[in-house]
Length: 360
Image (tube, rainbow, N blue to C red):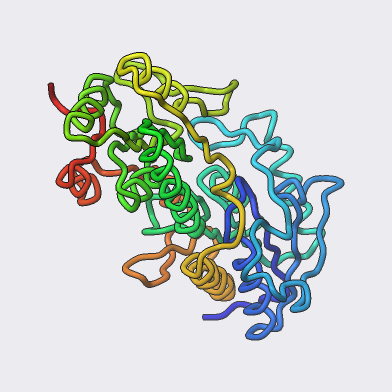
């Protein structure tokens, strides 16, 4: 059953990734062409619905050519006065800021709000929905770690960027007889490291789900050199860490640096010349792959249809290559980690990839 939908808002929140603009384009075109609804673009995530925030009406002209564009024309932020308790409720200090979002939504006469974001943004969206500004979520994270959707847009592009870099590093490793370490993103989930490592033929893949020991990695380097393989290629997710140790932080709240730790320790233990490359935000930028453009467009279009049916408090998701919808409560209930007994890890082990937990 369709509800009257005259005006909806759309915002992008959290870390940027390829495909955000494709979602915006699909939302604007679907809302206007099928429902003659006006779309209000909200700048810089939920901060655009705070006092002094910026919004504008988006038309077909505004979204022309967006399929190939990286980033987001609406801007985004992963900071803001929207602190939550461990139970997902607003802290007393942040509650007025959530209420201000709902109030601004009423001033803008929004019938609903489409929020494009990851776990943190969707937790904020869930509170906003409960407070009265009705929300439909669109899952976005290059880490691919949202449990209720099989895939998130941006992930395929991030993996493609990492694979291209690893292919290039492989030739350097061979030429200089070095150990090349490549650090990729992946705070709690190692999907980027695992997929890019398998696709590029990496010799070792270190992910947050499998705390590693130094001895297997040292043995891997020694065994390869004994067979005449005088180089090694290692992929490490930013959240990976040695057994019994904590993840490495560049500064408070910001992961990074495990690649250098791995590089320095392997050089110390093996004497083999070692170099590290940190891809960082390179994985977030640039033109999305065809797969990400299509997935982002499908999710954006489905979000508008869900809003038109009054399906608020829910998130569109991919299941068996079909777009379905789940509750926001389900969407943020758990992080999708790499299963240790899954086919991807099995593939790595079967083909000789080290994960750093191999027995002595």
